[in-house]
Image 1 (cartoon, rainbow, N blue to C red):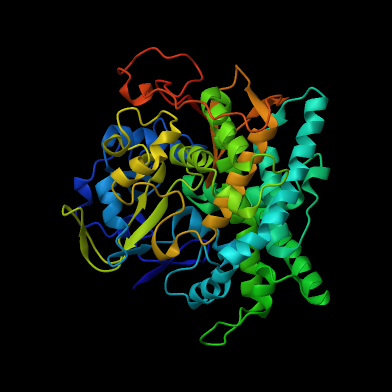
Image 2 (cartoon, rainbow, N blue to C red):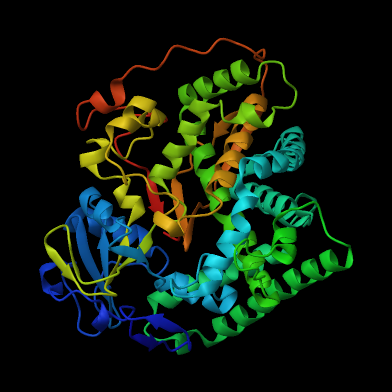
Length: 520
């Protein structure tokens, strides 16, 4: 496959630049009106919220559309049938481009950013996959509980002081400490800090810089930010190098992910991960292993606070399944089926990794209508795929966990729910993230009643991943006895309500998703 070199010096597969998209009949794909010469589709667009702008264009333009900015053109796909076509592994593969390629200076050919032809991806995947087996997950469970106890101790302190809690900030502390402890035996001391750990600051800086590179004509316009990004990358590298150095000097750990990276050979070839590869994988897991999970938890807590009947139903399930157990066991987490539905519904509305790119393995025709050359690529707009009314109904913007009832899931076509990507390159840690998030939601529901700020309206910040911005919740310690009966299922009103019907604030039948763009 022919390749091109970007201005950052990174080698990217053909198809990265607009002129090489690999769509012979690009003119047949609609684009926003009022396109400007040279600048492209910039009228009404925001530099800070490109994903949310794309959702708006998707509603206007249909299941496949294109956007152009500063000479680069991108094709977006979100219709369920087209997205399912692109999930066909025999015809399409992961494409590394846009913000993901911009992270290559940070983590190189790590699991998330490796090109399909790079051998280190398969090597690392095969070495690390056993670290996410059921046996490994059960071993992580006590450490997840220990970190969750630090969160509840912190929230108890905020409650005693009469303060609301910073949900995104505290979920970021929680998930960073969880992946650091379970994967690498490290403690960042996040809950003992009044400000984010410098590792988090550097991580957010690199993600934000990678996002900004997609919204400017040339990287030279970000010289000062580029220097800051280089300093952030150096801090990430130093942090991980120190972590690895201590592990090597300490004689090993307890068989966690870092031990696997340092000591495990490929089961067939005997090859081991190089020192550079270890560093890149550790940074990848520390960043991706906590950034997306913290967003998922934050969105779920936001919707639980707005929907007290959902929170009551989920809480009753926790009381019933965990009964009088002071500490839930590993197997008890998977039994929280309704809590898991709450999490899945939050991931449906706001998948914290909101898109993924796919490229054609050979010349093909997408959906029987759109020719694509080998290497041609498009972004599957997950956040809009999850809102496709042909799949999710006329009220797809509503929060309704019963969309993930077993019968509802079985009735839907495959490839319509993709919060962790698709195919061989889907997120290796998805079961880790789901177990952690379900456990934490169960613990928080059992301990607290959540009180929303009546003045808050959801604002979504974008830094490659998505996160609620400025979300704070009030807390009340529960007084209801453990083991209280589960309430009767809620009425089926939401999806059967008449379009435009008036609905009280905070119910599952809100007429539209109350989203304001970050920075507005």
